[in-house]
Image 1 (cartoon, rainbow, N blue to C red):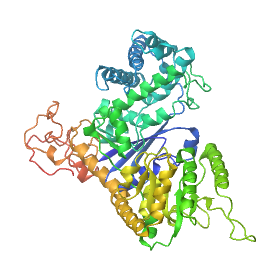
Image 2: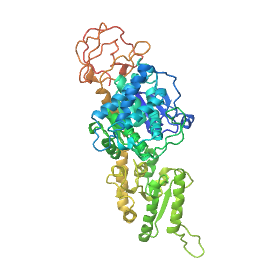
Image 3: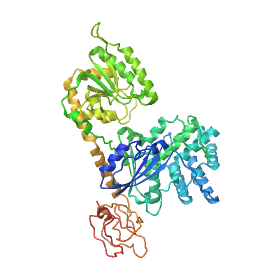
Image 4: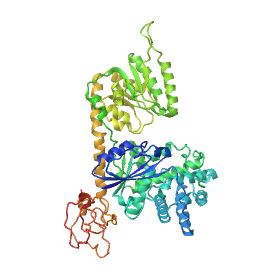
Length: 611
Protein backbone atom coordinates (compact mmCIF):
# COMPACT_ATOMS: atom_id res chain seq x y z
CA UNK A 1 0.00 0.00 0.00
CA UNK A 2 0.92 3.64 -0.33
CA UNK A 3 0.03 5.48 2.87
CA UNK A 4 -0.28 9.25 3.10
CA UNK A 5 0.84 10.07 6.67
CA UNK A 6 -0.61 13.47 7.69
CA UNK A 7 0.95 15.36 10.59
CA UNK A 8 0.69 18.80 12.19
CA UNK A 9 3.70 20.05 14.10
CA UNK A 10 5.04 16.52 14.29
CA UNK A 11 6.89 13.96 12.19
CA UNK A 12 9.33 14.36 10.43
CA UNK A 13 10.45 17.46 12.34
CA UNK A 14 13.00 16.92 15.10
CA UNK A 15 10.91 18.83 17.63
CA UNK A 16 7.60 17.42 16.48
CA UNK A 17 4.78 15.98 18.57
CA UNK A 18 4.34 12.20 18.46
CA UNK A 19 7.43 11.99 16.26
CA UNK A 20 8.71 8.86 17.99
CA UNK A 21 5.40 7.06 17.51
CA UNK A 22 5.24 7.98 13.81
CA UNK A 23 8.85 6.89 13.25
CA UNK A 24 8.23 3.53 14.90
CA UNK A 25 5.07 3.04 12.86
CA UNK A 26 6.79 3.80 9.54
CA UNK A 27 9.82 1.63 10.33
CA UNK A 28 7.67 -1.21 11.62
CA UNK A 29 5.54 -1.32 8.45
CA UNK A 30 8.38 -1.62 5.98
CA UNK A 31 6.22 -3.58 3.53
CA UNK A 32 4.28 -0.38 2.72
CA UNK A 33 5.30 2.93 1.15
CA UNK A 34 4.73 6.18 3.04
CA UNK A 35 4.25 9.70 1.69
CA UNK A 36 4.56 12.21 4.54
CA UNK A 37 2.51 15.41 4.35
CA UNK A 38 3.60 17.63 7.25
CA UNK A 39 2.24 20.96 8.47
CA UNK A 40 4.76 22.93 10.56
CA UNK A 41 3.78 25.16 13.48
CA UNK A 42 6.65 27.64 13.65
CA UNK A 43 9.75 28.88 11.88
CA UNK A 44 11.85 27.53 14.75
CA UNK A 45 10.47 24.06 14.17
CA UNK A 46 11.40 24.13 10.51
CA UNK A 47 14.88 25.52 11.31
CA UNK A 48 15.53 22.62 13.72
CA UNK A 49 15.48 20.22 10.77
CA UNK A 50 14.04 16.78 10.18
CA UNK A 51 14.83 13.33 11.49
CA UNK A 52 16.53 10.68 9.36
CA UNK A 53 13.83 8.92 7.38
CA UNK A 54 13.73 5.21 6.51
CA UNK A 55 13.76 4.12 2.85
CA UNK A 56 10.03 3.31 2.82
CA UNK A 57 9.31 7.06 3.02
CA UNK A 58 9.21 7.85 -0.69
CA UNK A 59 8.10 11.49 -0.53
CA UNK A 60 7.95 14.34 1.99
CA UNK A 61 5.87 17.43 1.38
CA UNK A 62 5.73 20.24 3.92
CA UNK A 63 3.74 23.44 4.36
CA UNK A 64 3.72 26.06 7.12
CA UNK A 65 0.65 26.78 9.22
CA UNK A 66 2.32 29.69 10.98
CA UNK A 67 2.53 31.90 7.90
CA UNK A 68 0.99 32.24 4.47
CA UNK A 69 2.26 34.59 1.80
CA UNK A 70 -0.22 36.28 -0.44
CA UNK A 71 -0.65 34.00 -3.43
CA UNK A 72 -1.43 36.91 -5.74
CA UNK A 73 -4.67 35.29 -6.90
CA UNK A 74 -7.21 37.88 -8.05
CA UNK A 75 -10.72 36.52 -8.12
CA UNK A 76 -13.20 37.56 -10.74
CA UNK A 77 -16.80 38.43 -10.09
CA UNK A 78 -18.04 34.86 -10.30
CA UNK A 79 -15.29 33.56 -7.99
CA UNK A 80 -16.00 36.32 -5.45
CA UNK A 81 -19.66 35.41 -5.53
CA UNK A 82 -18.83 31.75 -4.93
CA UNK A 83 -16.52 32.66 -2.04
CA UNK A 84 -19.11 34.89 -0.40
CA UNK A 85 -21.74 32.17 -0.71
CA UNK A 86 -19.65 29.33 0.77
CA UNK A 87 -17.85 31.39 3.42
CA UNK A 88 -21.12 32.99 4.47
CA UNK A 89 -22.75 29.58 4.80
CA UNK A 90 -19.84 28.30 6.89
CA UNK A 91 -19.83 31.19 9.37
CA UNK A 92 -23.64 31.10 9.56
CA UNK A 93 -23.40 27.56 10.92
CA UNK A 94 -20.82 28.74 13.46
CA UNK A 95 -23.12 31.47 14.70
CA UNK A 96 -25.75 28.84 15.46
CA UNK A 97 -23.58 27.06 18.05
CA UNK A 98 -21.08 24.24 18.51
CA UNK A 99 -21.93 20.55 18.09
CA UNK A 100 -21.47 19.98 21.82
CA UNK A 101 -24.23 22.47 22.68
CA UNK A 102 -27.49 21.08 23.93
CA UNK A 103 -30.05 20.54 21.24
CA UNK A 104 -27.55 20.66 18.37
CA UNK A 105 -27.59 17.69 15.99
CA UNK A 106 -24.06 16.72 14.96
CA UNK A 107 -25.20 14.71 11.95
CA UNK A 108 -28.23 16.70 10.82
CA UNK A 109 -28.77 19.63 8.46
CA UNK A 110 -26.22 21.85 10.22
CA UNK A 111 -23.48 19.26 9.73
CA UNK A 112 -24.40 18.96 6.05
CA UNK A 113 -24.36 22.74 5.62
CA UNK A 114 -20.94 23.00 7.28
CA UNK A 115 -19.53 20.20 5.13
CA UNK A 116 -21.01 21.59 1.92
CA UNK A 117 -19.60 25.04 2.67
CA UNK A 118 -16.17 23.62 3.54
CA UNK A 119 -15.93 21.53 0.38
CA UNK A 120 -17.30 24.40 -1.68
CA UNK A 121 -14.39 26.54 -0.47
CA UNK A 122 -12.00 23.69 -1.24
CA UNK A 123 -13.26 23.38 -4.80
CA UNK A 124 -13.01 27.13 -5.27
CA UNK A 125 -9.43 27.12 -3.95
CA UNK A 126 -8.46 24.36 -6.36
CA UNK A 127 -10.15 26.07 -9.31
CA UNK A 128 -8.68 29.51 -8.62
CA UNK A 129 -5.26 28.54 -7.21
CA UNK A 130 -5.79 29.54 -3.58
CA UNK A 131 -7.91 31.48 -1.10
CA UNK A 132 -5.28 33.31 0.96
CA UNK A 133 -6.27 36.76 -0.23
CA UNK A 134 -9.99 36.05 -0.07
CA UNK A 135 -9.84 34.78 3.52
CA UNK A 136 -7.97 37.96 4.50
CA UNK A 137 -10.28 40.28 2.63
CA UNK A 138 -12.78 42.76 3.94
CA UNK A 139 -15.48 40.67 2.32
CA UNK A 140 -14.72 37.79 4.70
CA UNK A 141 -15.12 40.08 7.72
CA UNK A 142 -18.37 41.50 6.34
CA UNK A 143 -19.75 38.00 5.74
CA UNK A 144 -18.88 37.10 9.33
CA UNK A 145 -20.57 40.26 10.60
CA UNK A 146 -23.74 39.54 8.63
CA UNK A 147 -23.87 36.02 10.07
CA UNK A 148 -23.47 37.34 13.61
CA UNK A 149 -26.26 39.87 13.14
CA UNK A 150 -28.65 37.49 11.35
CA UNK A 151 -31.87 36.27 13.03
CA UNK A 152 -31.30 33.02 14.89
CA UNK A 153 -27.67 33.71 15.78
CA UNK A 154 -26.53 33.01 19.32
CA UNK A 155 -26.58 35.87 21.79
CA UNK A 156 -22.81 35.72 22.25
CA UNK A 157 -22.33 35.98 18.47
CA UNK A 158 -24.63 39.01 18.26
CA UNK A 159 -22.51 40.76 20.89
CA UNK A 160 -19.34 40.48 18.77
CA UNK A 161 -17.58 43.80 18.27
CA UNK A 162 -15.19 44.78 15.50
CA UNK A 163 -12.06 43.53 17.37
CA UNK A 164 -13.86 40.24 18.00
CA UNK A 165 -14.79 39.86 14.34
CA UNK A 166 -11.20 40.56 13.28
CA UNK A 167 -9.89 38.00 15.78
CA UNK A 168 -12.29 35.31 14.54
CA UNK A 169 -11.57 36.08 10.89
CA UNK A 170 -7.81 35.86 11.53
CA UNK A 171 -8.21 32.51 13.29
CA UNK A 172 -10.39 31.11 10.49
CA UNK A 173 -7.88 32.28 7.89
CA UNK A 174 -5.13 30.38 9.68
CA UNK A 175 -7.27 27.28 10.21
CA UNK A 176 -8.36 27.20 6.55
CA UNK A 177 -4.86 27.54 5.08
CA UNK A 178 -4.75 23.84 4.10
CA UNK A 179 -7.44 24.67 1.50
CA UNK A 180 -4.86 26.57 -0.56
CA UNK A 181 -2.18 23.86 -0.64
CA UNK A 182 -1.15 22.25 -3.92
CA UNK A 183 -1.48 18.75 -2.46
CA UNK A 184 -4.77 18.01 -4.23
CA UNK A 185 -3.63 17.67 -7.83
CA UNK A 186 -5.91 15.46 -9.93
CA UNK A 187 -3.18 14.04 -12.17
CA UNK A 188 -2.33 11.20 -9.80
CA UNK A 189 1.29 12.35 -9.58
CA UNK A 190 2.72 13.54 -6.29
CA UNK A 191 -0.53 14.61 -4.63
CA UNK A 192 -2.84 12.94 -2.17
CA UNK A 193 -4.77 11.43 -5.04
CA UNK A 194 -1.97 8.90 -5.54
CA UNK A 195 -2.20 7.29 -2.08
CA UNK A 196 -4.41 4.39 -1.08
CA UNK A 197 -5.06 5.53 2.47
CA UNK A 198 -4.63 8.76 4.42
CA UNK A 199 -3.55 8.32 8.04
CA UNK A 200 -3.84 11.49 10.12
CA UNK A 201 -1.58 11.36 13.19
CA UNK A 202 -4.01 13.69 15.01
CA UNK A 203 -7.29 15.45 14.53
CA UNK A 204 -7.70 19.12 13.66
CA UNK A 205 -5.40 20.59 11.02
CA UNK A 206 -3.61 17.28 10.39
CA UNK A 207 -6.84 15.61 9.31
CA UNK A 208 -7.91 18.56 7.13
CA UNK A 209 -5.95 17.41 4.01
CA UNK A 210 -7.35 13.92 4.55
CA UNK A 211 -10.88 15.32 4.41
CA UNK A 212 -10.15 16.99 1.08
CA UNK A 213 -8.44 13.87 -0.31
CA UNK A 214 -11.55 11.91 0.51
CA UNK A 215 -13.78 14.55 -1.08
CA UNK A 216 -11.74 14.93 -4.30
CA UNK A 217 -10.48 11.37 -4.82
CA UNK A 218 -12.39 9.05 -2.48
CA UNK A 219 -9.24 8.18 -0.50
CA UNK A 220 -10.26 6.57 2.82
CA UNK A 221 -9.22 8.41 5.97
CA UNK A 222 -7.90 6.95 9.23
CA UNK A 223 -7.62 9.31 12.22
CA UNK A 224 -5.49 8.52 15.27
CA UNK A 225 -5.89 10.69 18.37
CA UNK A 226 -3.85 10.02 21.48
CA UNK A 227 -4.87 13.45 22.68
CA UNK A 228 -8.19 14.84 21.40
CA UNK A 229 -7.43 18.11 19.59
CA UNK A 230 -10.83 19.58 20.37
CA UNK A 231 -10.17 19.06 24.08
CA UNK A 232 -6.80 20.76 23.66
CA UNK A 233 -8.54 23.75 22.06
CA UNK A 234 -11.05 23.97 24.90
CA UNK A 235 -8.30 23.85 27.56
CA UNK A 236 -6.31 26.58 25.81
CA UNK A 237 -9.24 28.74 24.73
CA UNK A 238 -8.11 31.69 26.81
CA UNK A 239 -4.76 32.03 25.06
CA UNK A 240 -4.05 34.59 22.39
CA UNK A 241 -3.79 33.73 18.73
CA UNK A 242 -0.42 32.23 17.94
CA UNK A 243 2.23 34.65 16.69
CA UNK A 244 2.27 34.88 12.93
CA UNK A 245 -1.48 34.52 12.46
CA UNK A 246 -2.44 37.18 9.95
CA UNK A 247 -5.30 39.53 10.49
CA UNK A 248 -8.10 39.93 8.01
CA UNK A 249 -6.26 42.82 6.41
CA UNK A 250 -3.06 40.79 6.00
CA UNK A 251 -1.03 42.59 8.69
CA UNK A 252 0.64 40.71 11.51
CA UNK A 253 -1.42 41.44 14.62
CA UNK A 254 -0.54 41.56 18.26
CA UNK A 255 -2.46 39.50 20.82
CA UNK A 256 -6.15 39.36 20.01
CA UNK A 257 -8.99 39.03 22.51
CA UNK A 258 -9.66 35.28 22.26
CA UNK A 259 -10.91 35.42 25.85
CA UNK A 260 -13.92 37.48 24.72
CA UNK A 261 -17.16 35.45 24.95
CA UNK A 262 -18.05 35.99 21.28
CA UNK A 263 -14.61 34.86 20.10
CA UNK A 264 -14.60 31.79 22.35
CA UNK A 265 -18.08 30.81 21.20
CA UNK A 266 -17.39 31.13 17.47
CA UNK A 267 -14.02 29.39 17.59
CA UNK A 268 -15.42 26.59 19.72
CA UNK A 269 -18.19 26.17 17.16
CA UNK A 270 -15.69 25.98 14.29
CA UNK A 271 -13.40 23.44 15.93
CA UNK A 272 -16.37 21.43 17.13
CA UNK A 273 -17.88 21.33 13.63
CA UNK A 274 -14.53 20.44 12.09
CA UNK A 275 -14.01 17.60 14.57
CA UNK A 276 -17.52 16.28 13.92
CA UNK A 277 -16.93 16.39 10.14
CA UNK A 278 -13.61 14.57 10.49
CA UNK A 279 -15.22 11.85 12.60
CA UNK A 280 -18.15 11.58 10.21
CA UNK A 281 -16.02 11.18 7.09
CA UNK A 282 -13.28 8.99 8.58
CA UNK A 283 -13.38 5.30 7.76
CA UNK A 284 -11.93 4.53 11.19
CA UNK A 285 -10.96 6.53 14.28
CA UNK A 286 -8.39 5.09 16.68
CA UNK A 287 -8.31 6.69 20.13
CA UNK A 288 -5.40 5.80 22.37
CA UNK A 289 -7.53 5.12 25.44
CA UNK A 290 -11.09 5.07 26.74
CA UNK A 291 -10.79 8.66 28.00
CA UNK A 292 -10.11 9.92 24.48
CA UNK A 293 -12.79 7.59 23.13
CA UNK A 294 -15.45 9.16 25.37
CA UNK A 295 -14.44 12.61 24.15
CA UNK A 296 -14.72 11.49 20.54
CA UNK A 297 -18.16 9.95 21.08
CA UNK A 298 -19.33 13.13 22.78
CA UNK A 299 -18.04 15.17 19.83
CA UNK A 300 -19.92 13.16 17.23
CA UNK A 301 -17.84 10.07 16.41
CA UNK A 302 -19.81 6.99 15.44
CA UNK A 303 -19.15 4.25 17.99
CA UNK A 304 -18.97 1.66 15.20
CA UNK A 305 -15.95 3.46 13.70
CA UNK A 306 -13.96 3.65 16.93
CA UNK A 307 -11.12 1.21 17.56
CA UNK A 308 -8.96 1.72 20.65
CA UNK A 309 -5.25 1.27 19.91
CA UNK A 310 -3.00 1.88 22.89
CA UNK A 311 0.25 3.77 22.27
CA UNK A 312 3.23 1.54 21.65
CA UNK A 313 6.20 2.03 23.98
CA UNK A 314 9.71 0.61 23.93
CA UNK A 315 9.96 -1.90 26.77
CA UNK A 316 13.60 -2.84 26.16
CA UNK A 317 14.95 0.00 28.35
CA UNK A 318 13.04 -1.34 31.35
CA UNK A 319 13.49 -5.07 30.76
CA UNK A 320 16.56 -5.38 32.96
CA UNK A 321 14.83 -3.75 35.92
CA UNK A 322 11.79 -5.97 35.52
CA UNK A 323 13.83 -9.14 35.18
CA UNK A 324 16.35 -8.50 37.95
CA UNK A 325 15.62 -9.24 41.64
CA UNK A 326 14.03 -6.37 43.51
CA UNK A 327 16.97 -4.59 45.16
CA UNK A 328 15.21 -1.28 45.83
CA UNK A 329 14.92 0.17 49.29
CA UNK A 330 11.59 -1.21 50.61
CA UNK A 331 10.99 2.07 52.48
CA UNK A 332 11.35 4.41 49.49
CA UNK A 333 8.53 5.96 47.45
CA UNK A 334 9.31 7.29 43.95
CA UNK A 335 7.57 9.96 41.89
CA UNK A 336 8.78 10.41 38.28
CA UNK A 337 7.64 13.01 35.76
CA UNK A 338 7.63 16.67 34.75
CA UNK A 339 7.18 19.08 37.65
CA UNK A 340 4.11 21.23 36.97
CA UNK A 341 0.93 22.19 38.87
CA UNK A 342 -1.17 19.50 37.15
CA UNK A 343 0.97 16.82 38.87
CA UNK A 344 -0.23 18.02 42.30
CA UNK A 345 2.98 17.45 44.23
CA UNK A 346 1.50 19.55 47.04
CA UNK A 347 -1.03 16.81 47.79
CA UNK A 348 1.73 14.22 47.55
CA UNK A 349 3.85 16.07 50.13
CA UNK A 350 0.91 16.35 52.53
CA UNK A 351 0.19 12.65 52.01
CA UNK A 352 3.82 11.85 52.74
CA UNK A 353 3.52 13.72 56.04
CA UNK A 354 0.77 11.25 57.00
CA UNK A 355 2.89 8.33 55.78
CA UNK A 356 5.79 9.40 57.99
CA UNK A 357 3.54 9.24 61.02
CA UNK A 358 2.77 5.58 60.28
CA UNK A 359 6.17 4.58 58.85
CA UNK A 360 8.81 6.97 60.25
CA UNK A 361 11.70 5.62 58.17
CA UNK A 362 10.07 6.16 54.78
CA UNK A 363 11.72 8.37 52.14
CA UNK A 364 10.26 10.13 49.08
CA UNK A 365 12.32 10.73 45.94
CA UNK A 366 10.85 13.22 43.43
CA UNK A 367 12.66 12.67 40.12
CA UNK A 368 12.05 15.05 37.25
CA UNK A 369 12.70 18.49 35.81
CA UNK A 370 10.46 21.54 35.87
CA UNK A 371 8.33 22.25 32.79
CA UNK A 372 8.82 25.90 31.77
CA UNK A 373 8.67 29.01 33.92
CA UNK A 374 5.45 27.91 35.60
CA UNK A 375 7.05 24.60 36.49
CA UNK A 376 10.12 26.33 37.93
CA UNK A 377 7.92 28.44 40.20
CA UNK A 378 5.92 25.39 41.24
CA UNK A 379 9.11 23.42 41.98
CA UNK A 380 10.34 26.25 44.21
CA UNK A 381 7.03 26.23 46.07
CA UNK A 382 7.23 22.46 46.59
CA UNK A 383 10.79 22.72 47.93
CA UNK A 384 9.69 25.31 50.47
CA UNK A 385 6.71 23.17 51.49
CA UNK A 386 8.94 20.12 51.95
CA UNK A 387 11.33 22.13 54.11
CA UNK A 388 8.41 23.26 56.30
CA UNK A 389 6.77 19.83 56.61
CA UNK A 390 9.99 17.88 57.15
CA UNK A 391 12.71 19.79 59.00
CA UNK A 392 16.14 18.26 58.48
CA UNK A 393 16.49 15.26 60.75
CA UNK A 394 19.81 14.44 62.43
CA UNK A 395 20.75 11.19 64.14
CA UNK A 396 22.61 13.07 66.92
CA UNK A 397 23.69 16.53 68.08
CA UNK A 398 26.95 16.35 66.11
CA UNK A 399 25.62 15.01 62.73
CA UNK A 400 24.18 16.80 59.72
CA UNK A 401 20.44 16.62 59.22
CA UNK A 402 18.81 15.02 56.20
CA UNK A 403 15.40 15.77 54.69
CA UNK A 404 13.38 12.63 53.88
CA UNK A 405 12.16 14.32 50.65
CA UNK A 406 14.68 14.76 47.84
CA UNK A 407 14.24 16.62 44.54
CA UNK A 408 16.46 15.17 41.78
CA UNK A 409 16.78 15.34 38.01
CA UNK A 410 17.11 12.29 35.80
CA UNK A 411 20.44 12.18 34.00
CA UNK A 412 22.82 12.51 36.94
CA UNK A 413 25.29 9.88 38.13
CA UNK A 414 22.85 8.32 40.62
CA UNK A 415 19.85 8.28 38.25
CA UNK A 416 21.14 8.19 34.66
CA UNK A 417 17.82 7.19 33.06
CA UNK A 418 14.11 6.53 33.67
CA UNK A 419 14.68 2.82 34.33
CA UNK A 420 17.05 3.61 37.19
CA UNK A 421 14.51 6.12 38.52
CA UNK A 422 11.79 3.49 38.83
CA UNK A 423 14.27 0.98 40.24
CA UNK A 424 15.13 3.41 43.06
CA UNK A 425 11.94 2.73 45.04
CA UNK A 426 9.59 -0.03 46.08
CA UNK A 427 6.39 1.88 45.21
CA UNK A 428 5.83 4.34 42.35
CA UNK A 429 3.31 7.12 43.02
CA UNK A 430 1.28 9.21 40.55
CA UNK A 431 -0.57 12.15 42.14
CA UNK A 432 -1.88 14.07 39.08
CA UNK A 433 -5.17 15.93 38.90
CA UNK A 434 -5.10 16.06 35.07
CA UNK A 435 -3.66 13.26 32.96
CA UNK A 436 -4.15 11.87 29.47
CA UNK A 437 -2.37 8.61 28.81
CA UNK A 438 0.00 8.06 31.80
CA UNK A 439 3.26 7.16 30.05
CA UNK A 440 5.23 7.17 33.29
CA UNK A 441 2.82 4.69 34.82
CA UNK A 442 3.33 2.27 31.93
CA UNK A 443 7.10 2.59 32.30
CA UNK A 444 6.80 1.72 35.98
CA UNK A 445 4.69 -1.30 35.05
CA UNK A 446 7.38 -2.45 32.60
CA UNK A 447 9.81 -2.32 35.53
CA UNK A 448 7.54 -4.54 37.61
CA UNK A 449 6.78 -1.89 40.23
CA UNK A 450 3.67 -1.69 42.38
CA UNK A 451 1.89 1.64 41.85
CA UNK A 452 -0.44 4.00 43.68
CA UNK A 453 -2.25 6.42 41.33
CA UNK A 454 -5.01 8.99 41.31
CA UNK A 455 -8.14 8.24 39.29
CA UNK A 456 -7.66 10.68 36.39
CA UNK A 457 -7.53 10.34 32.60
CA UNK A 458 -6.78 6.82 31.41
CA UNK A 459 -5.17 5.65 34.68
CA UNK A 460 -7.78 3.03 35.54
CA UNK A 461 -7.75 1.68 32.00
CA UNK A 462 -3.96 1.36 32.06
CA UNK A 463 -3.66 -0.09 35.55
CA UNK A 464 -6.54 -2.54 35.36
CA UNK A 465 -6.37 -4.50 38.61
CA UNK A 466 -2.58 -4.33 38.97
CA UNK A 467 -2.28 -1.25 41.20
CA UNK A 468 -4.06 0.87 43.78
CA UNK A 469 -6.14 3.83 42.61
CA UNK A 470 -7.38 6.66 44.85
CA UNK A 471 -9.39 9.85 44.23
CA UNK A 472 -7.40 12.94 43.17
CA UNK A 473 -6.70 15.76 45.66
CA UNK A 474 -7.14 13.36 48.58
CA UNK A 475 -3.89 13.17 50.58
CA UNK A 476 -5.36 10.90 53.24
CA UNK A 477 -6.45 8.23 50.73
CA UNK A 478 -3.10 8.48 48.96
CA UNK A 479 -1.26 8.00 52.25
CA UNK A 480 -3.37 4.99 53.30
CA UNK A 481 -2.73 3.23 49.95
CA UNK A 482 1.03 3.82 50.16
CA UNK A 483 1.20 2.59 53.76
CA UNK A 484 -0.73 -0.56 52.82
CA UNK A 485 1.85 -1.44 50.15
CA UNK A 486 4.85 -0.48 52.28
CA UNK A 487 3.71 -2.89 54.98
CA UNK A 488 3.03 -5.83 52.65
CA UNK A 489 6.06 -6.89 50.53
CA UNK A 490 4.25 -9.94 49.18
CA UNK A 491 1.41 -7.85 47.84
CA UNK A 492 3.88 -5.42 46.27
CA UNK A 493 5.60 -8.28 44.46
CA UNK A 494 2.33 -9.76 43.17
CA UNK A 495 1.03 -6.42 41.92
CA UNK A 496 4.37 -5.60 40.29
CA UNK A 497 4.49 -8.90 38.41
CA UNK A 498 0.89 -8.54 37.25
CA UNK A 499 1.54 -4.94 36.14
CA UNK A 500 4.56 -6.00 34.09
CA UNK A 501 2.63 -8.80 32.37
CA UNK A 502 -0.23 -6.41 31.54
CA UNK A 503 2.10 -3.75 30.13
CA UNK A 504 3.96 -6.25 27.96
CA UNK A 505 0.66 -7.51 26.59
CA UNK A 506 -1.01 -4.19 25.81
CA UNK A 507 1.46 -1.32 25.52
CA UNK A 508 4.44 -2.45 23.44
CA UNK A 509 5.54 -1.14 20.06
CA UNK A 510 4.91 -4.53 18.48
CA UNK A 511 1.23 -4.66 19.41
CA UNK A 512 0.74 -1.09 18.19
CA UNK A 513 2.28 -1.81 14.78
CA UNK A 514 0.36 -5.07 14.40
CA UNK A 515 -2.91 -3.29 15.20
CA UNK A 516 -2.38 -0.60 12.56
CA UNK A 517 -1.26 -3.14 9.97
CA UNK A 518 -4.58 -4.95 10.40
CA UNK A 519 -6.55 -1.70 10.32
CA UNK A 520 -4.84 -0.63 7.08
CA UNK A 521 -5.80 -3.88 5.41
CA UNK A 522 -9.35 -3.74 6.71
CA UNK A 523 -9.94 -0.15 5.54
CA UNK A 524 -8.54 -0.77 2.05
CA UNK A 525 -10.50 -4.01 1.74
CA UNK A 526 -13.72 -2.06 2.34
CA UNK A 527 -12.86 0.84 0.04
CA UNK A 528 -13.92 0.92 -3.62
CA UNK A 529 -11.28 0.52 -6.29
CA UNK A 530 -10.43 3.98 -7.61
CA UNK A 531 -9.46 4.75 -11.20
CA UNK A 532 -7.11 7.06 -13.04
CA UNK A 533 -3.95 6.62 -10.93
CA UNK A 534 -1.17 6.36 -13.52
CA UNK A 535 2.50 7.26 -13.46
CA UNK A 536 4.43 9.10 -16.19
CA UNK A 537 4.86 5.87 -18.20
CA UNK A 538 1.13 5.17 -18.14
CA UNK A 539 1.42 2.34 -15.62
CA UNK A 540 -0.88 2.08 -12.59
CA UNK A 541 0.51 3.25 -9.30
CA UNK A 542 1.24 0.55 -6.68
CA UNK A 543 -1.57 -0.08 -4.22
CA UNK A 544 -3.43 -2.96 -2.59
CA UNK A 545 -6.74 -4.59 -3.50
CA UNK A 546 -8.21 -7.41 -1.43
CA UNK A 547 -8.79 -10.88 -2.80
CA UNK A 548 -12.55 -10.29 -2.67
CA UNK A 549 -12.24 -7.65 -5.40
CA UNK A 550 -11.08 -10.24 -7.94
CA UNK A 551 -14.33 -11.81 -9.06
CA UNK A 552 -15.01 -13.74 -12.27
CA UNK A 553 -17.06 -12.11 -14.97
CA UNK A 554 -16.88 -9.94 -18.10
CA UNK A 555 -16.10 -6.23 -17.89
CA UNK A 556 -17.07 -3.40 -20.19
CA UNK A 557 -14.13 -1.07 -19.57
CA UNK A 558 -13.19 -1.13 -23.29
CA UNK A 559 -13.53 1.35 -26.10
CA UNK A 560 -13.42 4.33 -23.78
CA UNK A 561 -16.37 3.20 -21.66
CA UNK A 562 -16.17 3.50 -17.89
CA UNK A 563 -15.45 0.42 -15.81
CA UNK A 564 -18.52 -0.37 -13.70
CA UNK A 565 -18.34 -0.50 -9.93
CA UNK A 566 -20.15 -2.85 -7.63
CA UNK A 567 -22.42 -0.97 -5.21
CA UNK A 568 -20.81 -2.55 -2.15
CA UNK A 569 -17.30 -1.27 -2.95
CA UNK A 570 -15.15 -4.05 -1.57
CA UNK A 571 -16.78 -6.57 -3.89
CA UNK A 572 -15.92 -4.58 -7.00
CA UNK A 573 -15.05 -6.89 -9.91
CA UNK A 574 -11.62 -7.39 -11.46
CA UNK A 575 -10.09 -4.43 -13.28
CA UNK A 576 -9.12 -4.97 -16.89
CA UNK A 577 -5.36 -5.03 -17.15
CA UNK A 578 -3.83 -2.14 -19.04
CA UNK A 579 -6.60 0.27 -18.04
CA UNK A 580 -6.65 2.92 -15.36
CA UNK A 581 -8.63 0.58 -13.14
CA UNK A 582 -5.99 -2.15 -13.05
CA UNK A 583 -5.05 -1.94 -9.41
CA UNK A 584 -4.61 -5.45 -8.07
CA UNK A 585 -1.42 -7.30 -8.77
CA UNK A 586 0.77 -4.18 -8.50
CA UNK A 587 0.85 -4.56 -4.75
CA UNK A 588 2.54 -7.92 -5.05
CA UNK A 589 4.49 -7.50 -8.24
CA UNK A 590 5.79 -3.98 -7.49
CA UNK A 591 5.83 -0.91 -9.71
CA UNK A 592 8.65 -2.22 -11.91
CA UNK A 593 7.00 -5.53 -12.80
CA UNK A 594 5.96 -6.04 -16.43
CA UNK A 595 2.33 -5.20 -17.01
CA UNK A 596 0.10 -5.72 -20.01
CA UNK A 597 -0.59 -2.44 -21.81
CA UNK A 598 -3.38 -3.62 -24.06
CA UNK A 599 -6.94 -4.35 -22.98
CA UNK A 600 -7.81 -8.00 -22.38
CA UNK A 601 -11.48 -8.60 -23.16
CA UNK A 602 -11.53 -12.16 -21.84
CA UNK A 603 -13.08 -12.82 -18.43
CA UNK A 604 -10.70 -12.70 -15.50
CA UNK A 605 -10.80 -15.70 -13.19
CA UNK A 606 -10.86 -15.09 -9.46
CA UNK A 607 -7.35 -15.04 -7.98
CA UNK A 608 -5.80 -14.16 -4.67
CA UNK A 609 -4.74 -10.71 -5.84
CA UNK A 610 -2.77 -8.45 -3.53
CA UNK A 611 -2.69 -9.22 0.12
